[in-house]
Image 1 (cartoon, helix red, strand yellow):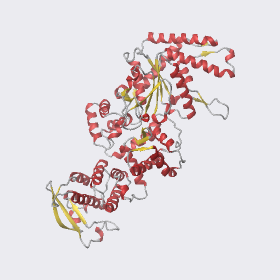
Image 2 (cartoon, rainbow, N blue to C red; image 1 turned 135 degrees about the horizontal axis):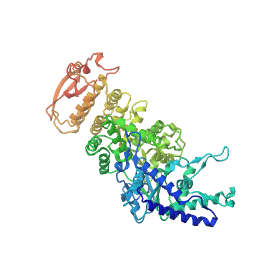
Image 3 (cartoon, helix red, strand yellow; image 1 turned 45 degrees about the vertical axis):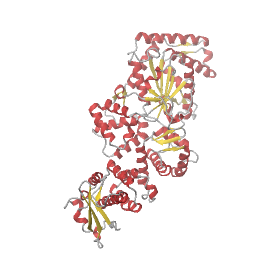
Image 4 (cartoon, rainbow, N blue to C red; image 1 turned 180 degrees about the vertical axis):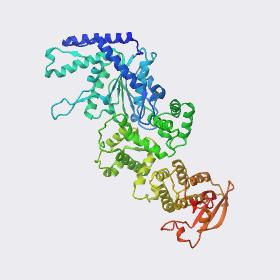
Length: 624
């Protein structure tokens, strides 16, 4: 054990003597000797060392050493929920320097799901156990209680509720601090007095150890009554411990309490430099650089701003040697992780107002909420009143009671990490790309594509994602372009965003002719907009999206050939793009064979602008 044997023995002897003196007033005594307690603490430290030495979760091929995976995390000195506006600035400090601050003793570390609370606690334990230069004048060793593991015993009355042991019995068991009471204190009516003596003995002994008492996961205590009991015990610890320190971790949304003699901090998001450092630590310099290059090209780069999500992306990359080419795979994995996998892997049972929801039902609620806020509030950050209105609009679909919007918001923030508090009475989805994905999930589950052009005009990214995640990307994309886009004539910024997002999402288009027509119709719409909005001569065109459309054409298996297209169109004139390639303007023939209408309705527009690179090669079966 890295901690000096003589030092630990000295601390244990001191604690045993202190406890023995305090017990004399009640004629109680220690029923074990100092060597037994010393052995218990050494066993516990060995367990803590094993627990804190590795980071492990389902996607990992093998656990990672904590010191390898950990990067110094910044903690905000003012938690976000206490800031009045988003513009309020706040100082931050590296988490492992908190206990070095002269004004800080007992610490509560808050954070969104996956922000790194437990990993930070593990790193702190590793420093205390293995680094003799870390806080040598203040604290000596870590004691760890994972609060979700507190015992609930079925020793109550028959048919009555189980008995919750609480924190102090767990600490007594950890220390093997056995007490012997006089006969008059062994009566049933003396139970409260025995507990009081026990608690004081635990407090005295822990304080003598000059330890950091890590209480990890207050939010993971399943029952409200049990949480409240532990909260009171934490208040007792914070008011009593002078030589030892308390470190309590919890999800931000579930901890709205104040404990005297503690300071609250909140883990901040990773900076770009920290993401790069994490990737290189995890994957090595060369592979880390390649990972970061791929990550920056993806729409979910912002999801890496929390340790949990970048760890999963790194794990996927390490296992598959790439980030999945289809972003929808990553979206679904992250959403599934935050709704189900994280709690399942940590064996956490949560009981909430919507706790009966299955993970897919939770995702449906979030998707509907995201769609409403995106199309009604029209911004990422929304107020308490916005949330209340959204909740009241959609709650009937989910059987949720009236007037519980804020409670549900708090539960969503606490239990998913997809929905977080942005500041004082303001909320947001944790990542813009996840909000877009959830909105798209709601759109594709509607009976039809929304027909309101004002709503659709707000959703170029979401509609591109919807095309990619739908059960039939070709049909969805074709219907979107050939029906809604032709009806509403969206503006150039919308088309540019839509096309670029399609390239990122990489929909799995099939070889249907209809999707080939949709590609040409979308391109023609774009050229019309360029000609209308520009002052350039119509016979010279600056084709800003030429490369993007050509890349999109490579995704379309059913591109039409010029031979087949000229069975339905005739050439009217030709424009010349700045890159020297022609753009042909076609007019539809008055009579077109029925087999060229591509469906029960005539979907061929009266006019098309065609760039030859968007057509299939002559004789290519895709275009026949």
